[in-house]
Length: 273
Image (cartoon, rainbow, N blue to C red; front, side):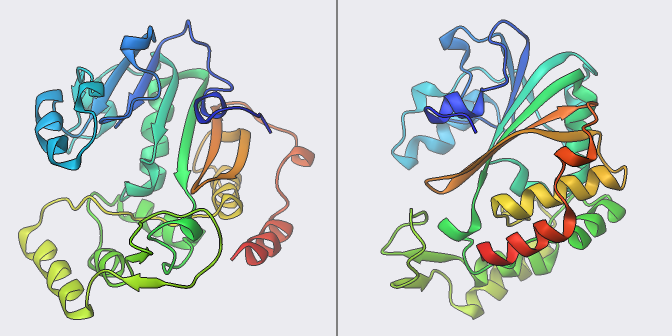
C-alpha cells in the first residue's frame, strides 16, 4: 500500500504528464488545471452554476475550475465524445452516486486508452452517514446493470432518507464508536421525499451503493470474473479517515493467485461489518 497524503495515494499510478479526466470535482479538484495538470473536467453543472450552488455551503468556490463537459442523460461517453483518449480518470466520491455501477465502469473504460487507470476515492459506509445502510451486493449491482438503470429506485431513495445518520452533529467520523448516533429524517418525511422523487421523475443526487474496502474489492473481482468489466484492481489502500482508495486498470489481466479468493473475501467482509 502506498503511503503519503490523500492526493499521493489517489495519484500513485498516475503520470502527471499524461492526459486525464476528472469526474465531478466541484469545489475540491484533485488534479486541478491551476496546478499544472493536463486534464479535462466533466461535472453535472457548468462552473458558473456550481459556484452559485456552493456559495451557500461556506466553501472556497474559487477552487471551482472551468468545466469542459456538462454531463447529460446521454451518459459520459456521448457527452464527452472522445473514446480511448485519456490516460487516467479521477473520480472522488462519484461511483457511489451512479444508478448503474457497471454502466459507469463501462463508460470510463471506453474513455480510457488501453492500460489506462481509473482511480477512485470511495466513502466507507462504516464512517459516514451511510452507516445504517446495507452493504451493496453483486446481485443488486447486476440488477441495476440488467435494467440499464438511469435513475435511482424508489426503495433506494427511501433508504437514503430513512437511514440517513449523523453522529454528534457530523455526517462523517473516524472511529467505529456507534454511540450518539441520530437519524436525520423522521420516517414519514423520508417517505414523503421518496414519493416526491417518483412523482417529479427527476434525478436525485443520492448514494446508490454502500461499501467497505473489502466489499468493494469483491464486487470488482466478481464483475471481472463474470466478464462485466475489463477493469482489474491495480492498487488499493484501506480506509483513511472516512474513505478508501482504489486504482483500477483497463485491460490488464492478472494471474489468479494475485486476485481475491471469493470465499475468503466474503469471510473478511463479515469481519469488517
